Image (cartoon, rainbow, N blue to C red; front, side, top):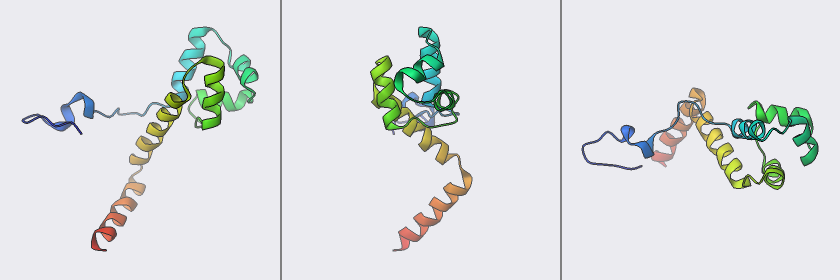
Amino acid sequence: MVTIKGIDPKMIANNLEPSEPTHPGELLKEEIEYRGISQKKLAQEIGISYKVLNDILNCRRPVTTNTALLVEAALGIPAHILTGLQMDYNMQTAKKDKSFMERLANIRKIAAVL
């Protein structure tokens, strides 16, 4: 976390976290629309079902490492960008889960005593 004396750390641009995480499917959807590629054509080209691709593009399914590599081969978007976005999305989603965060807090209390 970046700190600057006299400034609230939550107000520093490098410390900001989006209110809604960005799913890599959003980026892919915009990219294929911009390029004028149909979902059906891309799904066929990379060898996955249309439904799987559509679910990814509509943020209902995660981008796996294999899918990221297939997309990289077809569109030239680096796989590590897609998997990094997916990891960030997963982390931000987990942090918004109150019951999971309570569970983490309880584990931290127990670990502090050990």
